[in-house]
Image (tube, rainbow, N blue to C red; front, side, top):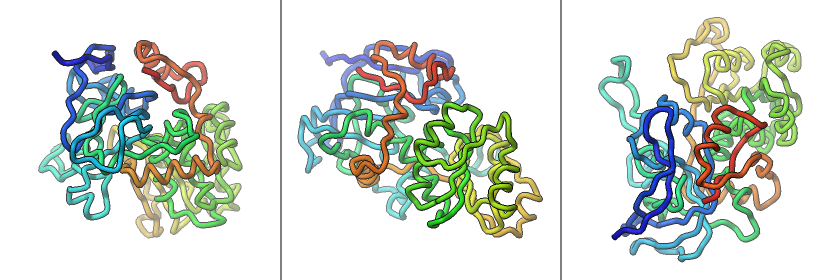
Length: 365
């Protein structure tokens, strides 16, 4: 009889509940990880609300920190008892996309018709945890293709210090990396949720010297200042586009990072950048975007619009943990709450409704 574990599973729109599930069997290329800390992501809230479809009974979550308890026969270079993380995006590195330099898109392919009858992408990409396979809000998680996805946690780093690496830090940094930031640049970051805050920190590490953080929450803007913002703009009391143009003498920012996923923030980001500037888009959009003619310079403005999905894999995780270990950045400030796994339903309610100043919740099985 299979041993059982506790796991947070999707039941139906509006219901994620704790349930008993069998502890997974380990295949040759897998690793079984005992979760010591995980967390809830905004994408999990989309799943909870039924806005992003997953199979009923699927274990949700995609941000694992834990300990190896069993290794597949083909996995070498690791040992049981070792503390590890794995990226939220866990490609197998054998796909065309991965071999061609886009491992985050492992599993993506063009489909003949999308929701609107148009060509598009199947948007699973390399995101498997809590999407295509059982995820991390559980006592154990099975990591596929473990050889390419497990990253040892350096001695001396706490779970909370590395908890952002699998997704939030990797995604936010991708926004800064895609923004074509040069030393001395002015960068504006729209939305200071966890991903936007990591984008703000990433912009500073990339060499931007004037970083403008935009949000409607003063507490989050205060955190943005701690992570590298030079100027903060509350869009409830100030027009962010006007402020950016004022700060830059009418020139516009060199880059804008959009970290929310709405028409308004996308359009504002485009209006903020100078001719030749870059809009780096991190938001997950739920409807078609419209590009305003004037802001786009009628197509003559040499603008660049880049999108990103969270980069994964062990090398990406190693680099991110190097940043934490070097003390150049401490993202422990983003972990504002802790809950036990058995309190996962209450934790979702807290996080989804953004109460009590929550940024990220450390979930402890």
